[in-house]
Length: 296
Image 1: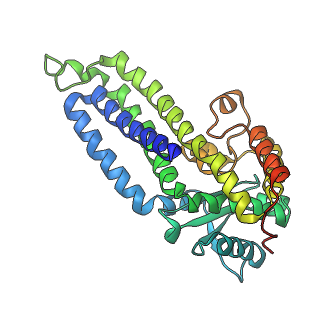
Image 2 (image 1 turned 120 degrees about the horizontal axis):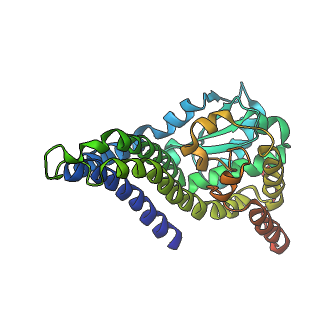
């Protein structure tokens, strides 16, 4: 329950940051506009963010005829998890990675890249998709997709800070303009997306360990997921994901950080340390004496 409370607080903080940017750009009027925009973004995200992210990555839906092995893996895992069958998508991308999205278990979708399906074994793929279904089961997908949408909107609105900074003296007393002036507008444009990234990072990290644990329980083999994470981490550092680089606000949706391995990406990664994730899973495998049999 603590992790859910923390996530709620962080999501509220992201919305408050959105409103604060509005105030710094346009005073009280700007804050009210930002509040209405945040409300609209949340409502839009609730109904459309899942499909929007899938469209952003050019994901194509598959079924038991077009991708029988992959679709079958997801179907069996969904049955084991007691979940409705999600929509299944494939993304044309060489980097091995995957994510889940949707506003709830009844409207969920899971997606894997062609790189993941090509480079990983069926067992490792099962471990990855079990992790994604754990996000669905925990209802993380709605929070994570709303976070991506708000973070992207914050970056967009912050850019207006540089253009509207000069309006602070438009009425002579600064009540309707930017309280910080031109320099403040520039600082908002630089610092606001950074602050949004920190909150976004904290939200994601609170959910990944739990999804690893429940995913291991769903597939019945923690080592499948541990081996998959090891492989994904090695390949992801070598193969760029240009779609994710163009849309960094969505990086936290993936099972592993899709941004190419650079110093800043590592320092402010939206994902917990991969070695620690693998260590915990191997510890689970060593301690587990009552795992259910393989899903297949």
